Length: 229
Image (cartoon, rainbow, N blue to C red; front, top):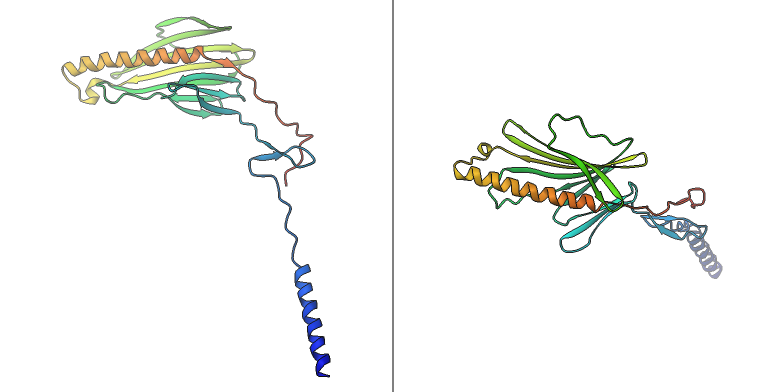
């Protein structure tokens, strides 16, 4: 009788173990990796298409590419690129070791639909065109002084079908008084301001000349892409 009880208990223990093992949930199938999209029935991952990128061309030159907006430009590596949905802004560094009052050096590339048109301005320093390769840019430059601040802007536009590419250089130099400059330092700051802005203007024009139309990689056909899990 005692032997039967031991056998019965052993059988019950085996049954309990089997129930525990087979009642565990099966591990979920692995889905596609983060940043990857499954594009075929086999679940093979394909990298997400990158629409914009920056890369260094040389120690002094970098390239910005935006496949979605269809262009690329070369720019000095020292510039800081900040992209937006409509283009890219470049912040140019200002040499703080020089006596100057330059407060802003900025270049923008903006893409918009419609016909190119310069903003209505009353004072235009220069107006003309610039040809680089197969591209012909329209150009205007403007300068103004407001409450001691000196403003200089140069703009280029390029029409491509029903899309307008706008290139803008914006500079601001503060009044010498606002920086506490007096005497010969005022003249030195004015000379340095001109040299700094002229260099930025030259670099900006070189960037515009490097403008190239690019075609981005073909997108994924959503009717054929396998759904992600």
